Amino acid sequence: MKIKPKAVKVYKPEIMVCPKCGNNLKYVYTVSNRGVQFSSGKVFRIKNMGYKCPKCNDYLYFSLTALKLAFKGYTYSAKVCCMIDYYKCKGYTRDRICDILADSDIEISDRNIDIIGNKVKSYVDCDYDKAILDAYRDMNDKFGEIRVCFDLVTIDKCLYFIYYSYFSGDILAIWKTDSADSEFIKEIIKKYINSNYNITTILTIRPQFRFYSVLKENIPSNVKLMSYSKF
Image 1 (tube, rainbow, N blue to C red):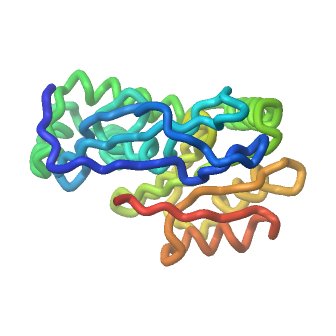
Image 2: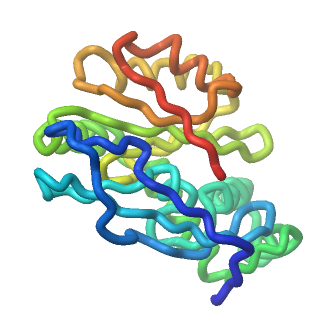
């Protein structure tokens, strides 16, 4: 389905130095340049710029802020994807969900409702320990450190916590709860972000949101918190 973007938003990597040697990264090519439909009904072209270290010249670095705006391979924002899961869990039919999204000028087929709903469900139902610990080992082996991203999407009173690998942009898990202050979320943070792991950096929501404070209160003091802005 062809969509017309309202404007182009350009993103560079949030960290512009090589994690291996400390040299400044240099632009090499555009990783992705796709139109994304947001829950507001607006469409923006999201341009994600790829950088490499001129000395190591091995891995491609990109903006996780840009990547997390929409799941890999999809042209709908992460919030739209979570909305689909939310309404499917409430028992709404595909046609009803299409109608709800159409009210916000979001164009989507009933087939994509099922595809996206199944994708979100696969992350919610995944083996968290295996996905996260495998990613931790991979990051330590390749980069000598672990960087991750916590995103937060709110649908009515349901909060979706999306956990990403910073270097690959892969979603490692999605948890659902009703509060950023819930003991469930605090236990997850303490379990996966603690001194047993070599986690150096967390990219997450802006400081004015409660979840930022919850993170700060429950992680080791040597872990750097970086916030992102949508646009």
